[in-house]
Image 1 (cartoon, rainbow, N blue to C red):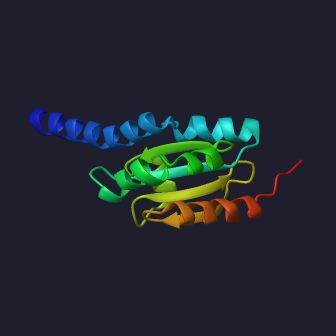
Image 2: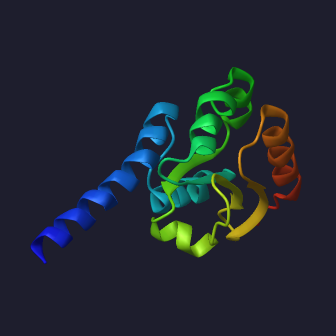
Amino acid sequence: MKYIMILLLTLTSLFANEATELADKLGYLKSYDKAFLSAKKEKKLMMLIIVEDGCHWCEKLANTTLSNKDVQSKLQTLTKVIVGKEDDAAFNYEPHFFPMIYFINPQTHKVLDTAYGYQKKEGLLKHLQKAKENMKWKK
């Protein structure tokens, strides 16, 4: 039983590392709750990315699209967070593909737009634009 627990803890930490590594690489937040509170306080659109450990498309999204200077510039005004599929936040959104990108209004908790799977620069920016158009802040 002791060995099973150690194995489970090791596997859990491996899953968490993928999301943590991508968040660290990109300078994104790693805690959904902290990101949500920050976005709400600063009245910023929130971008939640849910990744899966070992996901080629998740890594490709981080290494190409999200690392692109134009994309980084456009995402500057957002609160950005990356979590693993085992994170409590992921269960609330029930992702079906990885990566999953949600643009969220933290004032209303409403998902303004969702991008399924890997997105090229143009696709991600279209989703961002749609989310911004759907953004309605309560004053």
